Length: 279
Image (cartoon, rainbow, N blue to C red; front, side, top):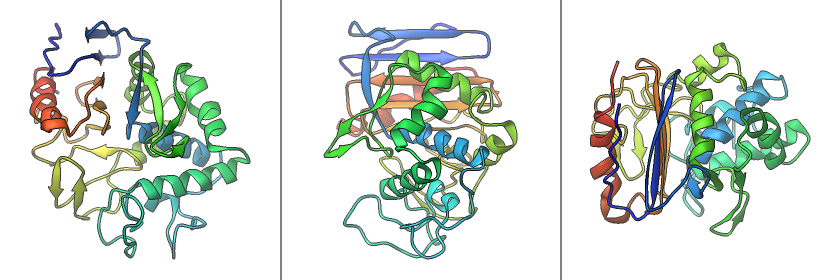
């Protein structure tokens, strides 16, 4: 395939990943090792770190999480079903009533994982995810008043996001096993309505264990050609990573323009993704 990158941004890089090759395109003098803040694409890394803690027996998906609220488990928090607000000082709601996309919930789950692992979350993230995948340029940084935010605080490169995409395309290897990964990319707490920030409200608003599922959502930032099994995440900083297992294809992008700046991303990303092969 030949990538065309005519996005309305100053600097950008994209990678399309298949089992056999990686194709890249760049704008504005970007290279694969230039670092960008990736905002909520951080949640893909945090989710994998949480799943690695589950796989290793350090924590259970269905045990109540300290500070999570009555009956709220790691599964609830990963699936945005714990009732926590997006950010403080929003009002908490009972668990399993709505899909409330929550940075607060991800910070709580990261604390629980760190306690279970007996270290800081940043250290566990490196040990369980970044080091095994060779993501040496990626780290949690100080962002918007939070030091090392596990919800939206990673800085990374296109090369490192390509390594992450390969892991997700390979069913989580070598970070987690295929059975747990299959569970993580299937609908959790089905039937919950909710909001994908910057995209729209959906009923149902399907989510896995940290992975947003394309499923039947229309319109969608991944485009209409992606299969219902496609999953991933985008970030408010204007970046994304999606995986379409049915098409054996993944795509990642970094840019210097925020997602909601004049709504450019939703006007650009779906059509660009739809030019890529489908299942």
